[in-house]
Image 1 (cartoon, helix red, strand yellow):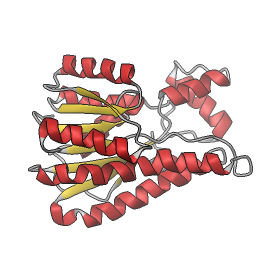
Image 2: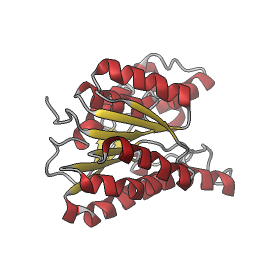
Image 3: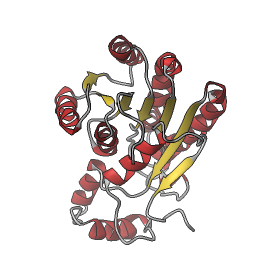
Image 4: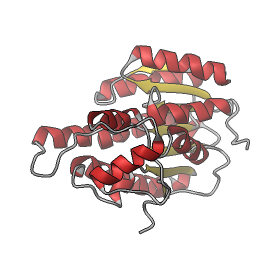
Length: 264
């Protein structure tokens, strides 16, 4: 399906790895110009080469720590100087410390909200002037299915992601007059780098998505209706549609991509 990205200007925050990388790849496959933003230069530059090989006419790596408002402003200033406008902003960043409520420190709570919420809160205002200049514009923010199916090991991460969903809903209302559509993707158990590292730490076979889901069920009690963990490109495909021109009348939605685990 042609999503209407040919020549479009797009930014994927956290686009160097995992689900962010998979999303950036989907945009490049459809002919978008893609800027990947993150902290690690080598990772981003390798991603930009891959995106160029996939068909992006202008893929670029922008090194910025979204925890620093000055670096965020500088990153989007670079986008503005390069393209003058922006059609799609995708915010994928959101790690956070694991641990039950009684174990987490104030610093860990702050870290979860700074990474999981405030990065997005900083990036959207910096991008808005560029989004408003474009013929069409979309924002896609990543939340998590754990906001709907709680895990006692992820209270800070889940709280931050619930805030992402709430703020995104508010933005969809605020920006409707500009016809800038704002939507949320809530991934389930996806074989990202973080989940694979966890699987390795507990001696689970993360390479096999069926065994990975069995380990998730054993440790977290979060099985999906489908008997396997999801793959990053399965998230990227949904995020790409929401970020696309083809998505012409969907805003304020929270889309679960979780193998059916929300159907309870």
